Image (cartoon, rainbow, N blue to C red; front, side, top):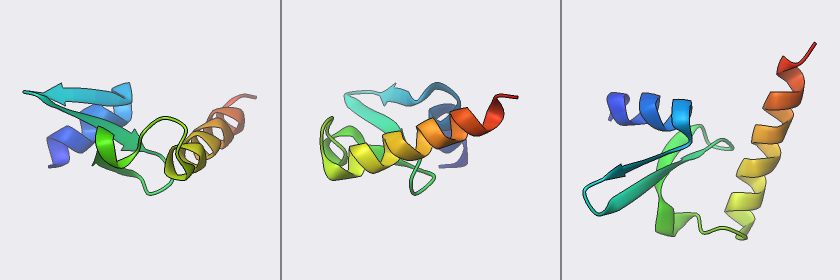
Length: 59
């Protein structure tokens, strides 16, 4: 799972066979795409955390 996590964190998502994994920034883990559909509360929390990380990286 370490390789999957590394790739998902770097690119945001990864497709393995017929399963798509996405990176959950809130929990810092890869999750199955159906567990975090776009627009869900989990997705919103992840996007908020991602935005905060991006803002923190800029000078």
